[in-house]
Image (tube, rainbow, N blue to C red):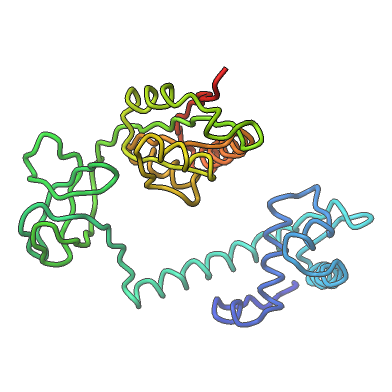
Length: 280
């Protein structure tokens, strides 16, 4: 009966070779039977020659079999057992570390009245920020326990958060502006932009580029968001805020793509609309 030495979590983390074997076995399990050494080389950032040596070692240990022309490998039953055992030990190790250092997540909120540490308080969301509220408040959808004392207007941390915060879905209105070559702010229908602004009633204003800043100046408005527009607008909308964004035409598609990517990654449903503000 063949045996193999199972690395403890600490040795697995300490021994780079054992950790790389674990990563390779995990990659093979996820992609088998169509596993190529080249793909693993690129995924782990090591040379294909190094991957080939690890594959040879794994085959000698009876953990890996198959494969022709550096493709179509799969773990043996023994290899799957080792992978699961190492994963379990890593999980137990991480759990023990968390217990040792007593990791506790603190949720931030603003106090609306005096709060004592250990007190259970209600929570509501306003303009993307969490505030304390009476437990019997009909708008209270969640509750938590205060980690510290706090006076009205002060920040405090919360633990044991439960319930559901009632957050309306915000929207993003992207106003498409002409580039400087196409006239810049002089070719913008300022009255139309003002009408869009008044109808949309935004909570935040974002601007990208000199043309947008010039338009805001003509409207007597100031931007709240000037950098990382796509991500910032998406976060604001996800917290129930309406965001009005002025963007030069060539950047509109890029912003839309970035918002769509955020929706995909977060399984979100950020709603956006594009309006053209160029004069006819």
